[in-house]
Structure formats: C-alpha cells, structure tokens
Length: 68
Image 1 (cartoon, rainbow, N blue to C red):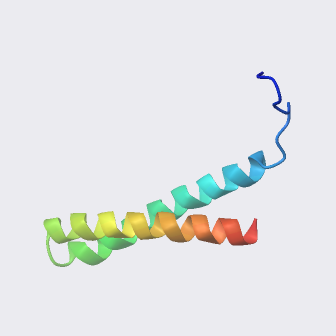
Image 2: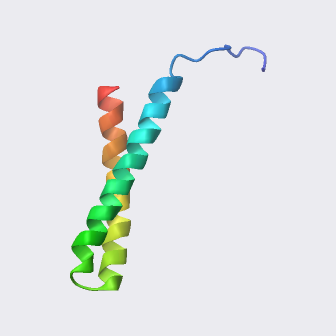
C-alpha cells in the first residue's frame, strides 16, 4: 500500500456495478445490432453490431451511474 492510500475504498462496489452494466449493455447492444443487420447481409450485421456495442456500453454505464 502506498503512503496516503486508504485500505478500503467505499466506491469499489459502485465502480464494479458500472463496469458490469457496461458489459451487459455492450453484449445486448451488439446482439441487437447483429440480429437487425443479419436480415440484410453479413457486413451490415457486423457494422451494426459494432454500433450497438458502443451504444450499449455507453447507455449501460450511464444507467448504472444514475441508479447506483
């Protein structure tokens, strides 16, 4: 432990919840993008999956910061 650090950080559970919500949001967003894009073509599914992953990550983290 470094000088000046506290042995216990009360914000640790909040940080973990934000990361978990971001992971779940990215997973759901990527899946939705893939399902929507797969009706058109493989490349469209891939592209929309990337967009959905980013949007899900952002929205999941924002939701967790607001409610936790």
